[in-house]
Image 1 (cartoon, helix red, strand yellow):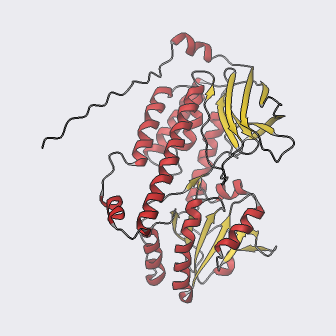
Image 2 (cartoon, one colour):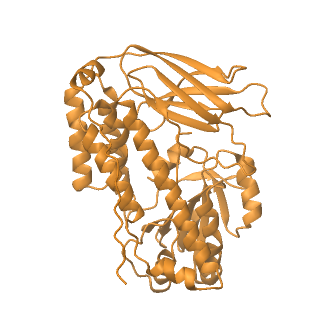
Image 3 (cartoon, helix red, strand yellow):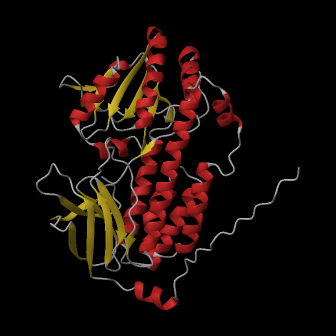
Length: 411
């Protein structure tokens, strides 16, 4: 029987702005008004606050202002600036939005999470503003959709393997995706980049495009930055971003296979300070995680099996949490009952910069000499097999596929 042909008619999204509008937005905007609202406030707090930060692209946004949410659930900021840039609104440490400050903006936010099980995850908020601001809107939406699909696919794969009926697992393993998740994300990103390539707001995306490896992507990102620096001399963030990318690349080179694992010391679960040097002479898996990270928690039983099987052969594990809530860290440790040393980063941003990761779980396998063997993003069956092979044979393997990991947010 001949299958019917299905035609899909997709709307064409026009992203080209009129020349007059572009010329107007090239002017430096000295002040804007930010008007916002939150649908829900935190009932446990007498005062609900909203915080405003500016992203200087050095690695950590700088706090600019804060205000109390009014009785009508609204808030207002007045921004005075020497040039437009990227700002972040943090509503009660529960919800956030990002915008480009070349015109007044309006933001309607959900605010407090009213769900039964509260989890702080990336959340999309549309910001009414300028043409350039829409680049951030569309880029944020692309990231949010990619994040949701990542979690869905990871959970489907995880639970299909646990099911007694193997049909689901076989389908997940053998069915070719029409458009794989990463390709889907990259395709949408490329359309946005081409549409806004010469606009100053591109600094928002370039930081995530360059990576830390020399190559075509890195060269393209640096070329785009040089274009912005030349075209917009006032855009100091572009020059700062270039310096940050170069610094991150140099740091990433220090984390290559064969390089010594950085010497670090963090607070331990007993109130002391501990490092990694004591594990020299053994293979060591260093696991960066957090209590709120689903893929991190799902990986723990697998790491436990690995630990129990190879501890007698000189294999150890150390977990380093990037939790900012010490009580949440302690609660998760108790629930997971991990039989290896637990450390807590005392500076999440510094730790992420030093070990060059933006998603967790991220794991480093270190050899008996204290040198990095391999880095794993997420914990796949492939990563598990490679770690076992390295421990038993002292061999080295090609980089494993990247598994699901939780991307970090701006706060």
